Image 1 (cartoon, rainbow, N blue to C red):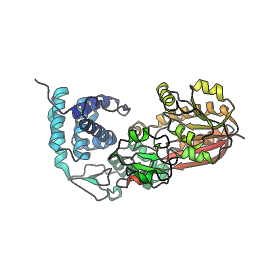
Image 2: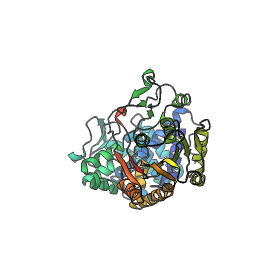
Image 3: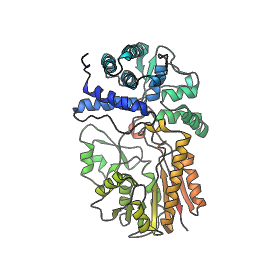
Image 4: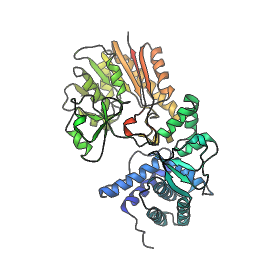
Length: 452
């Protein structure tokens, strides 16, 4: 039998999803391999993959209405074809339904031929079930079991009630959030806030630029930047010049959400130490907050590190021309900085529960056990950092989490270890489906503790 011919974009993303399915919920972070594809095909592959990752559990909820056997018992290629096919039908409305269905069926004919009839039947049933989308806001409180919220504020309507009766389970399904996580939010923050958090996770996050250190009037002279609701930030409009080209020409603007910038901003008001004060960035990643530290404290010496060799290599390349930023290994930092740091920034690894629109796969990984592992790692990082802090210095602890165990509980533990609480601030996320990009921001937590 000759191999079926499907478009390069779908071939790439279906193969990628076939590899991802057995990993769920521990999805790999890499994107489909689009090398060799033209830009249009590459964009389609990424759009399909993004829709699947953002709405994986929503798609499974729809499949339950049609399938007799559990979805996850199907062949990986069958799951991939159903996920990608249904994502196109439900969430990518510019794609012709016949193309999404035909190429999904053709893919399984090559990889799981016995399920081709099933894939065809389920996808065609979804199209028959769908009504035209409308702009009526999705309202979980109205017990709407026959519609799904869209990221742009519209809702997808069905001819029949396909969703659970239980409001928590329904909210979890329509926002592709694990039910235990929604129940946790409801217990911690209340039902209304849980609903906001779940719906917020559907928003397509904008690219936000930190403009606080750019020359006055820079944003006003660039038609691709719209002022953000928070002063000093702008939203990038991708129509026009390439962002990488724009950023490569300037060292005083960079991509950074306002919530991410909070740690350094808050630290600025609580730092003592003049010229050549030593500042440590011990979880520097690829250097976003390191750049902000260098801009905020231009006379300080900054020592940055990360446990990952590849990220340290990026750090070294980024700051090679900056004589006040040094990149070292974690073991080197301990020897250099013992008892000398005026500021220590700990932007610790966390659950990412405050940045779910940017990291949608993080909500699938969330479990109490994972939270325990992360808090243990955070404690180890805190324990190692405290001896490096000099007398009168400030330790700035930050996360992109909304979980108390990763935030306030860790700050209290640092206090028990001898540090003095100075200030703490939790920023909850903002932006709901249909809101303008300028209203969006992530969540963060920052605690400043001093050594007296």
